[in-house]
Image: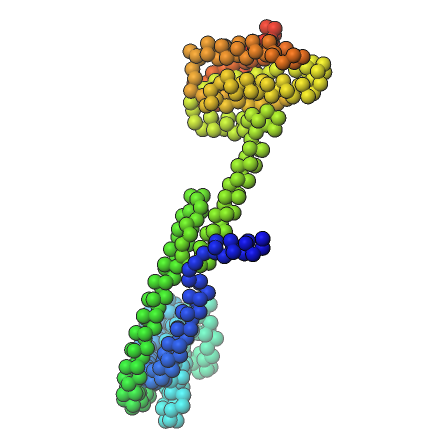
Length: 461
């Protein structure tokens, strides 16, 4: 028995390429080619870094010199504009450049990084340029402080460095005009221009030193790099072919099944058995579970929506149908039905006979009305029917059905089975369900009972 079960299991097992086998093949192939590429890349990177490093140093040195020059000129411009106009906007712009943007300082710092490991001469030139730059800023702040004092400007509105800049006593004792003249002399005089020119010459010398080193290294690296790149071209072509092949296999064996499965799951369908071994196995397993779940769901729905005794739709199903009729306006009739004197049947004949009476009523209602009409047991001896696509002009059809049922109930074929009847209240709707319908049918049912039971009443306003 176990051997037969094992053989059946093997027969049901899907055939196909396993994702694990495919993955191992792709990984091993990729590793082998990657090892070749890594060795080649390592050689390329060594040469490339030397080449690009020198090129970048050259570009950075040019940019740094430009930034240094632009930053210095901008500071000079803002200083002179403030000395001329005494407008604090220029002083604020000066310190935004000096303390926030810092083009001049950043350029000097980057050049110092580039020159690490080079000869001391270039570093000394750069250090001198930095010292001169700081000295130049000191002169500019000095000039702005004197310019502010020369017009009795509010120092509190100026940047803190201008406020805190110390002036010697002899300058503080100068007249306003003398302070103004001295401020002009500091930023427009020959000493100021000479300091600027000296900084630019030193930066130019530093740039020439960097360019010279770059040119020598570039020439030696170029030939070696060209040779290595030829090998890399072949390795790269090989890896591209492997990637294309792997993608095609993944697309066919993995991506396509996933797309199909998503579509099937969204549509609540069974899965197509396709793709790699694992996907086929998954599809077979899912389909088995899908079939079992569908069967269980159908059984559960029957239990939830159907009355256990009569097999009719129950009160919960009745409420659901009401909601659907609210959303879909269509003409229908609502019948509320009570079994007359049902309590006396239970008391006289027992609950077993009472149950048989309810089942008998349920069967008569199902057999008497159309298959499209929905019959419910909504309480102990309370039933309801929703007759779709029916108008008030068809009252006689309903009347005949109820009269026939009551005729059968009043003349039982089984000996000893009690005689009883039904009371029915009926109302019509021209367009879907609304809350007044149940009240109307119930009112008509009450009228039937008031009139002696065993009959029906159509609701009228």
